[in-house]
Amino acid sequence: MKNFESYYDWFVNLVLEYTPKILVALGILIGGLIAIKLIRAIIVKVMKKRDMDPTAVRFLLDILTWALRVMLFITVIGELGVQTSSFVAILGAAGLAIGLSLQGSLSNFAGGLLIIIFKPFRVGDYIEAQGEGGTVNEIQIFATKLTTPSNQVIYIPNGSLSNGNIKNYSKELTRRGEIIVGAGYGSNMKHVKDVLTKIVAEEPKILEEPAPIIRVKELADNSVNFQILAWAKNEDYWQMLSDVQENVKLMFDQEKIEIPFPQRDIVIRNLDTKNLPS
Image (cartoon, rainbow, N blue to C red):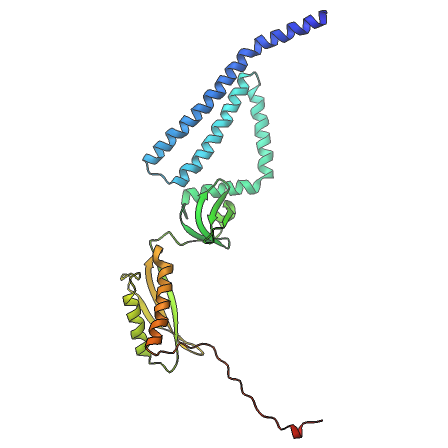
């Protein structure tokens, strides 16, 4: 009976001692989470007023949120009576061990920071990198999310992305296209060039400045190849290439200009079967 009473007294004293601490820690936890949300909202508002890049805003908010959560966690366990100094040391040692085992992830994290700082591309840009091409949907902490023209989602690690070559098709407002048109050697070169000039002049998606260029590129094996260099807005680029090539075919047919294609001549000879060995 005495043992039971002693355990009971110990339990009551423990509850009386730690209940206030638990309630205070719980209050700090709830208040801290609310405060983190308010801080995020204030920072978003300030950054939007300063017209900061949405990608940078999202990236910085993620880092800030996790840092505040770690600080809140240390504060809560400190209120419960846990020695925060030893906990911080343990956390630091664990962080070092995790960092050594996750060197690739840290490289991706650093790559994400470099992308945010130097901005080789932004959300909405069409890029080619690491053998993949697509529109940038999101720049995350460790990877960048692309959507291909066929609606496939690709995640490229930021480390390899920041250290490799990046081709950004959306960085400039205009883009120059190259179209190669072949004409037969029997065609009048001046006539071909006049027809190509008319096609280019009548294409509304081709910009007047910089002025388009039409010239002979090479004397190929089966054709005289003409080169058309024309500028268009980014959003009109692919349609401009398609329209020009379609009009080339239509106009060449109308003007009786030959568009050569590879051909082979097959010669069949009659053999004298009398002289063949039996």
